[in-house]
Image (cartoon, rainbow, N blue to C red):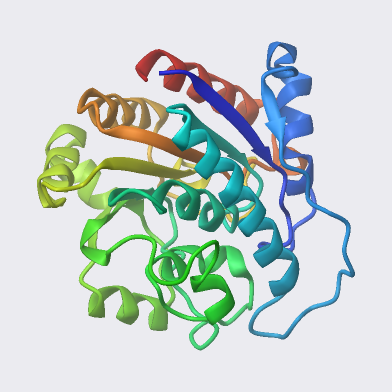
Length: 285
């Protein structure tokens, strides 16, 4: 399988400067990626807040639809699309593209739930909403990205490494019965046991697995260059083991790595981890 790497330098889902420099920072560190990363540019648009509950909705929706088309084409060619972000709102586009013709399982590896809607959000930032939109909840324009309806069934979703849910968001996650294996649970039960539990939770009829990896799942001591750091995260060895077990199933067909923000990086710690993870994925596919 051939890998296709797509750069998605979106910042408007988080409204945090620096995320738009994610790809620039990556290729500056690893110049070998300069001709390998296909950048899906964020088009200039009137940068007005759509509403307090859905900031930059039109820009993000337009971008995710365009990204979904690119990813769908990559999947149709039989390639492995790897999307590098940028904020986590871009995963709505990548998952929509992957899922158009496939019933996929989804591993959301993240410190946060990203399961808010315009009704539950306290910030209005759409990078806190992509998984809810993917599941068919919330704003119509977001949930119908690329094609109408849910992209992934909630029973096909598993959280790994979480440790920061909003109250209303947490209730919504529980209502939708999404399996949540927090960073504490992974530390307690071990990586292998946790990932095997997650895999056994997925229905047997899935056509493939998409991994959406937010770098803030890692502890900010080792990975400071993210938009919303949360203490007590995974270490890198745990992440490597998680990915190795998932890829060993032979079912992983696509992936995101998001929320790298060079503005907040310290001594290149985060870009080194990002670069190492890209290299690891290349070896594992």
